[in-house]
Length: 331
Image 1 (tube, rainbow, N blue to C red):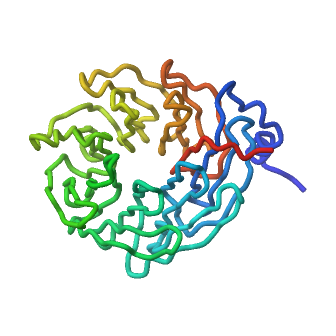
Image 2 (spheres, rainbow, N blue to C red):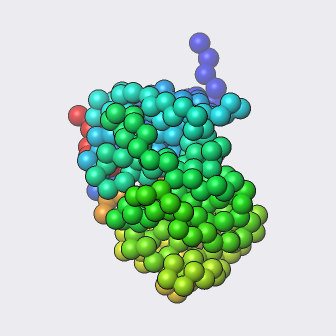
């Protein structure tokens, strides 16, 4: 049997995981791999790939409960629109169940609501955000954005308000997550994909694919101003828990940018030549960021304070969404 050079490299990463270990950084990652339609479960401390599990076609985003027991993947689909969620029993290293979403197609952005029994999920095709009970699969609520391409969703810490980036309508929609009502819409620069809201609900930041700008919406006044620019594809927006720092992966620009939220000063830029940075999450008390590198089939482990890559762990092909939990599974 023969192996390609890439296969040998990936194999060596699996059998020699200690090369990817970063001192003091532990926990568990769940990573979606779009092309093979799988999710990887990875022990961060050792770099070991604990399991590769099947999902629906085109898995894009993933969230994990605070106790690290359950992860939920959005099965976005490929040529055919997806309409399901894959629920993963993380400690059991298995798919617990698949939740059919019926008429609600192209699920993409996803967040756990407070209590971790419900998830809010965008349905691009249906111009909606649906709330789903993770254990029962029941569809609890439908909030219609009535905007084209409602792609990502950010929710305030209390769970009462949510915000979507509506790629085709060039808007951000503010939703009452309890009643499902549309509260406000904000016109923003063209093709807003990445969107997130500060935990305290004061600001929404949104990335424009067409203009390469990241805008900030002051939710008290409703004003929209430019917070950063010069991106090739501002793929995601991630706030630290205290909202002092914003991390912005530039997918086509092969960089991760660090911006001070209040002053909007760029504090640093991490160049990742040819890597294709996409999904990003925080762990380890917000001291560490985990960034999926789509073109490299791995996740970078980044020290937030020094803004440097400290190591990598291997995932699958074209990794995108990434979620971290403090729970350690490796034995």
